[in-house]
Image (cartoon, rainbow, N blue to C red; front, side, top):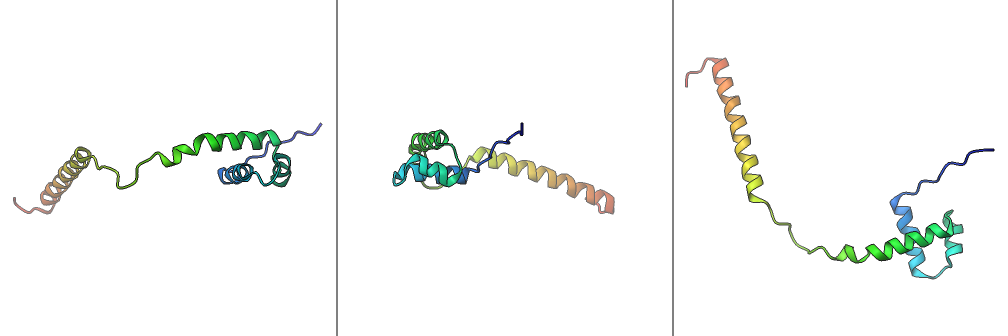
Length: 97
């Protein structure tokens, strides 16, 4: 018996199939035949799309708030690293402080 490997579909392909199923212009069997997918899988992808569609619009628009403490901490660490490099370079070059 020959072994058949599973088909791997990208997220774009899944979305395309699910959107086609949501439109309802074609039957599930027609969509499955067109895209080479089992009809049950078309139904699952359609259901998943419908369940997660509301989540796409829940996020608020606008710039995300910036965490000031993280950026301040990052800047202080950068200043410390640069100061150490400067001190090392002064020492190696023989420049008096």
